[in-house]
Length: 606
Image (cartoon, rainbow, N blue to C red; front, side, top):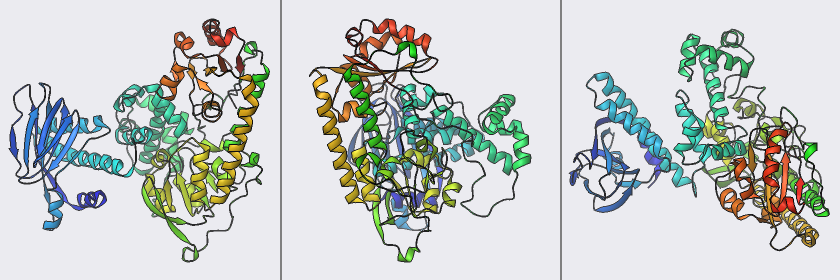
């Protein structure tokens, strides 16, 4: 089915909710057979059942959605006493029989995010049961958001391979529900993961945690209300999720430097006609310091090793630290491969489109026509990969510009975190490259970026070999990418040979970070883990492999530390974590790494 065409029909067709019914085995309301007289959705919310739709039998479990039209026959065979579902009947007023046929088609779909749809069904049903016209009107108004969420999830599933990006989905949920009370635990529960795991994904992919991002969305919305309306501060506070106007005012001043009234008086501007023209401030205030999980504690206060815990380093430790530093540099920039330093992209404006050679590029959002040899690139997540290919973009986000291991980043404009679309527009790019989450956090999303310049949404592989190869294709530098990857493979082989005399065949490795209020175990994506585990091929402990690399664990309790420690431990102790380290040290004393003296101090900042 052509989902883009189907969504387009929904966007231009008048639809009306006719009825919504809830069927439950418990109260005996589930019909054996139902013949539809109009279009409908069936949303199964609990239990299991075999549901037949126009002769096709679907085994449904928990949330499952079926759609059909006039004269379609439904059959229900519950497989337990807890089965329940909603039947939502609607009418579409179409201009032609061909368009009407689209709303009578039968299809089934298993959502990947259940709670947003279930919440909408519950609200719609509750309102529809009320007697007043206002409640019925509200139920009508809740129907289209339900359809929109169904179509969005179908479209995302059709366009993306594998599981949808959790951060992208959570960002979408925040934008829809920022007026409501949202906790990290509730947000994580929607996507069936832990709060610490979701926080880790957010910080790794957009530089701020989910609750920080929620706050910045609320502050940004309040700025819009302040500048574009005469609403009272109390009303604005309530509309962005804060019942306490005094708390809202303090938070607003903390993030902007102004009280709400001062901000309105000092920044009120005439209405702009440019559809791309955004408000002066982006979602995040200009003085926000973005960070990822490794930057969280040192962007504002420099933190490093605690001298009282500097364990002695063997020759192996020194060699491993050298390898890690050298290889991290190789991952982040091209200067260590023997290639010339990165050169700035042309400062001349892109040649007129009529003379620029273009090609189609397939990416996570479909296909986009891009320049064969882009000259003015804005990259919102990847930067080291471009510089490894001797390309200096004209703009990048604060998130990656703060990386201390990158070489010269002068002349690269900082577009902020979340990125400011107006700033990107001013750079006149001929190509924008972003990841899914960064595309969502820009005001207006992917569509706004696409109006500025050809925009492609790429995977976040966290793998220099795959990433450099991908950007070699995007930038028309396939040969340079091959040379870089060959040099990187040679470097890996050299370092493996250098460290092999110091490592036993069964030696296991762990990476531990002690902070003042928490302890973190790292897997194979950062804190040197990608170098240690992926490229040098060193063995993690079983617990690190199952719970961290293949699981969701990141933050652990102090009591669990011995379960994760192997024969060799890389330890980063943050400044201010001395008391916490005393607690950790007691638990480390019986570990293999402590007993053999194979604990290696590493610099958290690097």
